[in-house]
View 1 (tube, helix red, strand yellow):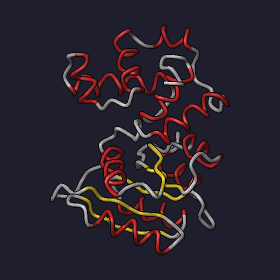
View 2: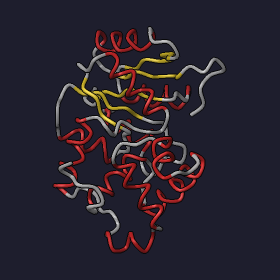
View 3: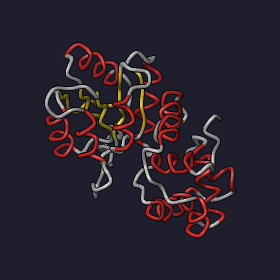
View 4: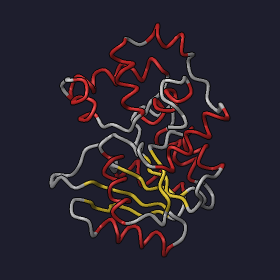
Length: 228
């Protein structure tokens, strides 16, 4: 995603409840450096707007009429999307079956709608930067549940050691701890560009397209403790 000339993050907000949609939009628009470029009351409109406007992040409700948030998320950032648009899922439910579907559809993170404004802003900035919302407790709980259910089919850990170099495994481990590219670079004494290059090679090897999906793989293969 590319920001506008002024450096603002461009956001589309999708929620079928008008008051919630307007409230979220107003909350984000009052934050310096964030511009709400579109609003949608259903998933189909969200997809249409996002493809037209190419925002940095789509804040997506799950339960919407017609095309729901999971379907819309899959259309914007699913495994078959060549040029994905990051999606931050907003929900009124703590841990809910729909969240697992959103994760599998390619969502970059989850946040409760009653989160503090500062947390919402942090989440939007994090997802826009490509970091996802990995340190968020809701995301961690969803990851634990997904691991328990074995909803996805990752490569096996034994196969992973054949596919990934020791350095790549180190980076995936730190990624699973919620670290940004900058954090990983400092931890491993690497250039940020080197970390990005490693991740660009790692994801196709694991059959994933997002950092959050790479973290799912790490949890499922025991690279990071699911209870941690």
